[in-house]
Length: 117
Image 1 (tube, rainbow, N blue to C red):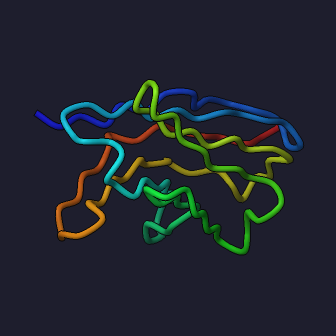
Image 2: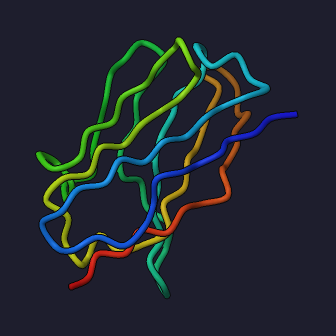
């Protein structure tokens, strides 16, 4: 059974930081691209950042220079370090896994991030 379990969300003031974690089980972690998406109320779900099996990363323009995605093969976990948070970063953040060769994909249950004073 595949599971992507997110943690680390919460309430933070503007300018603050949070680190999200996504622990993956039931998949061969090393052959999946891992990513974070987010969805604000009334908006579509958008890509925030992704890291391939080989370690290449890409980011949404809105988070470049503020967010960093990384992965640990030792504990099958992908992280999203979020710095200089803004109110517009408020959303539910979802972990996503895609097999590097097939159409096989998985989603986590989401974790709420709220940036507010």
